[in-house]
Amino acid sequence: MVHTTACRPRANARAERLWFRAAALACLAGLAACASSGSTNGGGTTSGPPRAVEPERPTGGHRFFQEGRASYYADKFAGRRTASGERYDPERMTAAHQTLPLGTWIRVTRVDDGRSVEVRINDRCGCGSGRIVDLSRHAARRLDMLHAGVVPVRIEVLRK
Image (cartoon, rainbow, N blue to C red; front, side, top):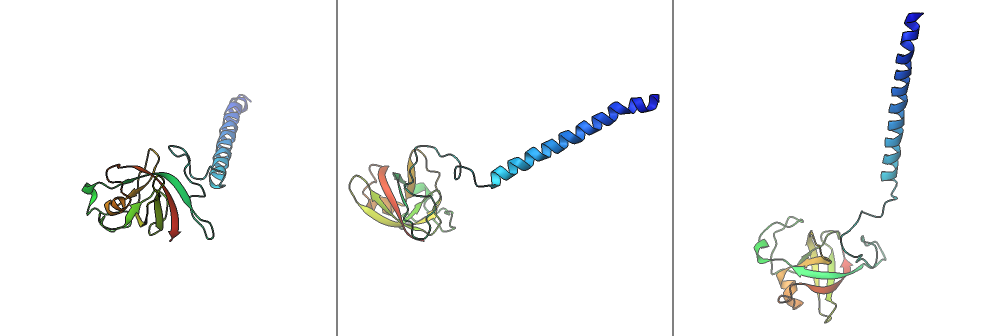
């Protein structure tokens, strides 16, 4: 009888450990279900004010506009590989954007004077401070923004 009494706390401890493990697995399963259910805010937080007028990913029939600020690539990036694999050429009409698919053609329009250019997205940018696009030097020259450096713009997706 002494032997069975001594084993009871051990049996309870085993049951408690088993219950704890089952509860932990249930919690992890619940977290995994929440993460994959699509009930997030659509990609996390962004720095700065919301800039997209319509959803980030353009779909058939929907036009995509975004307002913010544009800057342009420094000369030191000439010849370096872009996210698309091609080399950056300051004299081509190209740009970098955070989320638009590579190869997408966009129209970039200066908000203050109405000048616009059409460029192809071939790179990614770590745009911050309200900047939404980085332009090649040639595109920046056509928008007359070389001296200003950063200008307010509106971008519109033309085609993929």
